[in-house]
Length: 102
Image 1 (tube, rainbow, N blue to C red):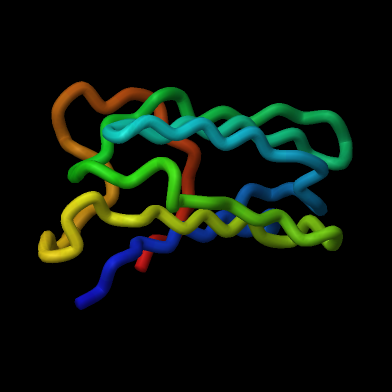
Image 2: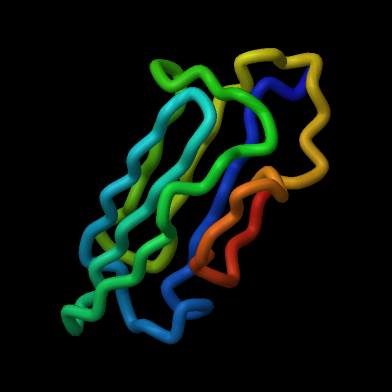
């Protein structure tokens, strides 16, 4: 069973040279991301409702020193659930694009 969902955000896909810092906030049903670029631009993915619940304590994120890619690993609360989309279609707000999730 696939117990995690991985989200990758590439600096180049956001038209920035480097992700200087990233603040990732998780709840069992939401994901929020605030990215600061090397040239002080701020990009925000406001609180988004996930399509399924996650285990916040087991989920994590990583930003290498190069700042080229933010990786977020979301651990599924129910590993039997198949995720066909990252976010719920209900109550969706502004999204930071493009993102890849597998």
